[in-house]
Amino acid sequence: MDINNLLIKNITNPHELERMYRKDPKTFKKSFSHAWEQNPDSQVLGVWYERLHFKETANTEKPSLLQKDFLFMGILAILAGIITRIIFHFVEQEAIAPINLAFGIIPFIAAYFVYKNTPKKRIIYSITALFLISGVYLNMLPLHYKDSTILAYLHLPIFLWVLVGLAFTGNEYSKGSTRLAYIKFNLEYCILYASMAVSGMILAALTMQLFSFVGLNIEDFYFSNVVLFGAASLAVVAAYLVSMNLKLAKNITPYIAKIFSPLVLVTLLVYLVTVIWVGKNPFLDRNFLIAFNGILLGVLAITIFSITESDSDEKKSISDYINFSLIVLALVIDSVALSAIVFRLSSYGITPNRLAVLGINILIWANLIWIMFSYMRFLQNKSGPSTIQDAVTKYLPVYGLWAAFVIFTFPIMFR
Figure 1 (cartoon, helix red, strand yellow):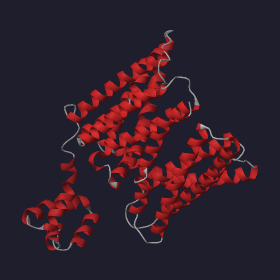
Figure 2 (spheres, rainbow, N blue to C red):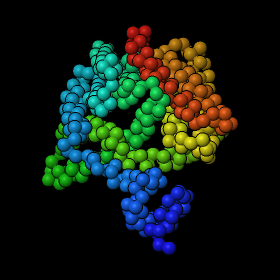
Figure 3 (cartoon, rainbow, N blue to C red):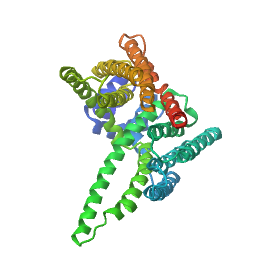
């Protein structure tokens, strides 16, 4: 019996149709049209028709230079490059702080998402007002670079990152799934932007080398007018490409999460054993305490990305146990860091740096506790993976609120 007759004979047997397709996909596709013409009312064949032709219909709307999204992105990218170059001019004149360069890039990424998602007017007004208020406020601070001012500068990117998240999520800012999509966007964005940045650096190096052969040193000019413009513009372009579901970043991020989680776990365990062996003390060594907190932030970031890139089904894998081990290890590190910070506060007094580090460590400690208990319930089959993701996504605004608190109160509290 030929495959045409077999298709028709097994029209009510989905399992056999699947077996036939997997055995010889090419022959199956060629014979499917004949069977579909004879049985256009078959729901089973209708599903198969959509399955076999989905890619063809999904790709009919290819990005073009005339699409509104592309044109708007191009305008924003050019504006980001121009504004960043203007801001850099004032930074060179020491008229404003270098952190203002963030306002040459991040608002334009937020503007693209506002255009793409079209949220309610109150959300648009809120995002715009917060960008303006933070920009005006930071530039009212004196350029003396006291600890409180530096802390405000360091927390500004976190605050602006949350504002971009609000623009990304739009009207669905309260939904965990949308916040989870924003976290995934960040990882894909970093990978894509890093890839383009490396290519840009190679091009810049080749260009400067070529001009050096003819006795021209263009490093300063090229950096100020080309590299800076390109870096700012590419930031907007990368956001556009990721939002267009670029397959490169989406395909590689799950593998990065799965590879780096066990590597970070092993490295961290070896490092902690070495630290104990050599007798390093975070209670007395300030630089080591700073490094300890840096490790904590890195582990937290890796863990969050691993959780967001894990499969959304109910099945547990070795990755889940690795993530849980990372969370427990990060909690141990944070507990030690918290103890050291409290010790230094009680011994040496309150300073802006100590208070800021104490605050962020308490926030991370609470977040890790929530994630750890959610993971325990999942591993004990008492809940699904969504509870773990909720522990990550629902806590994100807290970091933004803390960043806002540091930005707007520390320079006033510690003059």
